[in-house]
Image 1 (cartoon, rainbow, N blue to C red):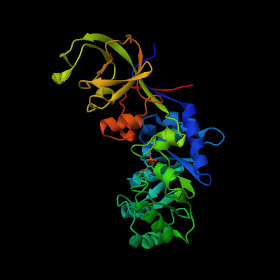
Image 2 (image 1 turned 90 degrees about the horizontal axis):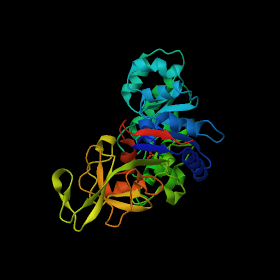
Image 3 (image 1 turned 90 degrees about the vertical axis):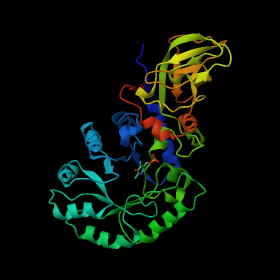
Image 4 (image 1 turned 45 degrees about the vertical axis):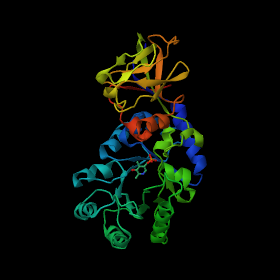
Length: 363
Ligand SMILES: *Cc1c(COP(=O)(O)O)cnc(C)c1O
């Protein structure tokens, strides 16, 4: 028997999604965003799946220096970009040695660059705050910072340019077009490569695709938009989170189940116990009625999710048996739908699985 719970990762889905994103953004290179352990799908699993074949990703986006080193150690030779840049001057020698590129979003990084001495110039992407106001240089700061980077001997030229969207997942929100306009006005006469679009930008704002798209969630077959699904864009969910039924129990009307005893059966029924809980990363706050997929149908969670288990109402006529496989999300039950029940986003569900969940790349 395979270990459970486990997250089964589909190579075909990842490769299909990359090809689909190339179709959607035919003039852009693809920087596959694999931060946070490949959004929970396994950093090297994902990188190898989308790197090493004809039409594979052109580069990878990461949030931490350590993630980039892991990719290099795992044999990934393509372009790597630290989306939040470097945090310590002492990392710079290894960053250039491994040919890792870095975002520059803050003066403290520029100060470090002006005081360092490196064996090779560092490849940089200057981040412009076009309206998200989280990271990046303001429109007013931009030209001064650009000049300082141009003057810095350890910065490779030309300087690449990037920005990030605050609301691209809201197709009716004007802020995205305002951000695109601000970025374009500021960079119109400059050299270097440009990138603006995350998954939502790629899917909903084609005018933002530019030289590079930076899809994360879409690569995993998931839509960035609440109420939407990856399958609406011909993307295929790459993760199937599964576990097993470890008990089927007769349950009487009026009886409660689990910690707090707060759910009570309205009629006699059969309850199933599934071996997954918040200790595996399945949210404890999943409310009654959150669906799981079992033997071709949705069944609702009842009672509180505990650390190692959760309980579902199978119905009085159920024929489900101990050992049956249960899908928490995947191709039969969209993670976007589960996220909506729980009041979170699919990004959080897939990235929060704990090490107790076996992540298995399907052949
Ligand atoms: C995480 C991230 C992305 C990918 O975002 P998705 O919404 O998952 O596509 C792109 N760019 C930057 C700067 C990021 O931090």
